[in-house]
Every structure is written in C-alpha cells, then in structure tokens.
Length: 430
Image (cartoon, rainbow, N blue to C red):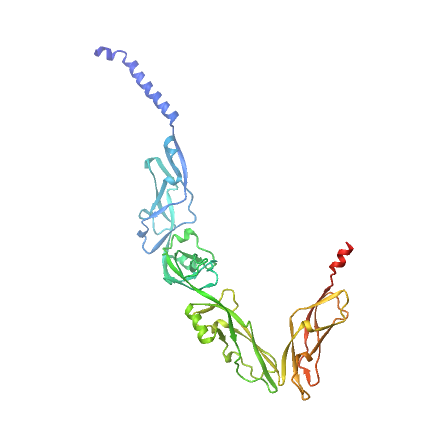
C-alpha cells in the first residue's frame, strides 16, 4: 500500500499544483481583484473639545479627498461613497501652533480591511479660530401669510425674546439679524402658536449658508401671533386748534385727508374705543397751530402716535393724516359748486367736454352791500372754450355773483375735451 502512494509522486504533485493554478485562474477571471477610487466631501472632525476655547474650521485650500479601496469585484460593486466614513481626530493633530493645522484622516468602510484602504491627501487642513459669544434680539415675522378675512396680526411675540449665540468669531461678527418666522397664520381667525427654527442674516442681508449654520448651536423658539379684529370707518376729529388767525381772517372749517381710517384691535381695545371715544380718533389742538395765518394752514400728523393702546392701523394704511384749516377773510364762506352746473361757452359742435372733478371750491365774501344770505342758486359759473381743441386743460372760470358778494380768489377747473362720437351715423355709413 505504501509503495502505491509513493509511486509517480512527482506526477501527483504536479497535478495538485495544476489544480490550484486552475482554481486561481478561474477565481481571478470570474471575481478579479481591483482598486476603485471615491471622492469624499465630508470629513467628521472628532474630539474638537480637545482644542480649548477655539473652533475648528475647514481650510478653504483643502484639496479634494480621494479614497482608494482594493478588493474583489463582487465586494467593490456593493460599495458607494456613502458607505465610506472619514474622520479627523483633533487629538492626532500634527502641530496646533501651525496654520492650517494638519489632522490625519482615518477612513472606515464596513467589510474592508484598513490595509486595503488608502486616502489622498492623508491630512485634513483645519483652521483654529477663537470662540465668541454674543446676545441677539430675535426679530419676528409672519412672512407672506395673512389671517382670515376681517382679521389682522395684532402682535408677534417670541419665546425667548433674545438668545446668546456662540461660534467662530468671524462668523459671529457677520450676524446682523436673527429672525423667527411663523407661517401657519394663513386664513386663521384665532391666535396661533408655532415652534420654529431661527434664520440668520448677515450684514449684507444674505442668509447664512447651511455650512455656516453648522457652527452655531441654535435652539428652536416658539412664536405666538395674536389676531385682532378689523374695524373700518373710524372717524378723525380735528376741530380743535390753537392760536388765532391774522386780523381780519377767520377759520372757516378744518378738514382731514383721509377723514376715516381702518384699524385692527383686540376685542377689549375696540370695545373701549367705541364706548369712550365713539369710534373716533381726535387730533389734539396743539397739533394745529394757526396763529397769525392769513391763508390756508396745512400740516401732517402721524396718526399712529394717537391710537389707543391695543389699536393699530390695518396693513397697507398710510400713517399720515393731512389736516387743513381753511382760513378766509371775515365774512367769507366756502361753497362747493357742482361742475355739472358749469355753463360751457364756445364749444365746437364736434367736441364734448367733461370736468376732472365733481366739484370746485368757491370762496365768496359778503360786502357791505349784502342784504340777504347768499343762495347757491344765485351763483353762475362759466368756462369759455373758444379756440380749444381736443385735449386736457386747466382753465379759469368766470363766477357771476349778485350784488353784495365778491370772489375772494380766482378759480380754475380741470377740463377734458374730446371728439364727439356718433355711433348711429357710423353704422349708416357702413
């Protein structure tokens, strides 16, 4: 038996070797070994607390990181860049006193031996920057969201109202505004509370990037929108004034533009406005000083200064109210004359005229010869269109008054002259 085993021993050895070689060839042809490369865009900096009172920032000159993995085709075919994790341990930094600091990169990929992984470059470039902490007040916004019909956002509050932000000094110095936006007030008619993230803008009004935000540890905040009911036709009372006009003059009346406003307010504030002020905002006399005036006095008031607590103007409303005290000679009065009653002279047959305003203002003074109170029906107003063609004009008007009355100042009217269109005539021609 022993003799049979040793017979042709060299041939048997060659057979075994050949079989192994054939197996290796088959394996390599079917599942060859190769090296694949991957680009890594994210390196996790670990043990950053090792660098006391400083923040670690990637250097802008950092080269793209390539990872080379060697393995069989079947293994490599299952690997993507997302399977590869790269770390840079600050405790392994080469020299913390150099800038940038070079930190060795360690790459891990499940199922792959570290000996089969190579990374280029081998170090991650990091800049060390001093930490800074600064306190910021949070601005609150509702964006483009609008409450339901008949409601306005009365107030927006944030909890907390201010926060301390810690981060790299250069980044903290860039911050201009910290904003919290409440978005779910659209169409609402009741108060709304929402938890929201903070958005930060730099001094150029640009929002910080996602990369910059990762260096700031920001909490979520809670924003509350209190909705107020809208009330229209709130009157403006400007009948009180200080001082006296020049000798021989009087105050005919005081008017405001606009004469009513729309406001929004809490239920309590609106009820109080109705009960105590009869839904009217009064302009204090000290805002209207007509001392020595011998012509109309006009001034502008910021009405928001006079609104009661819990009341605000509706969105889009002008804050300005114009006040005009009409100052006329003693014995004079103002009459609003309808432009439809103006007599038109010398209008060509093929033209028509319209007036730019519904009324014109006539200021008329009684003379010593006046015996009766002037009736507006006694006033005759005329405009002469002789030689006028199609177009827009501001023309003087003639005012004829009965004896005992005279016009205080000249009057003009806006006139639009256009060609008369005869539709019936045009149809017959066709």
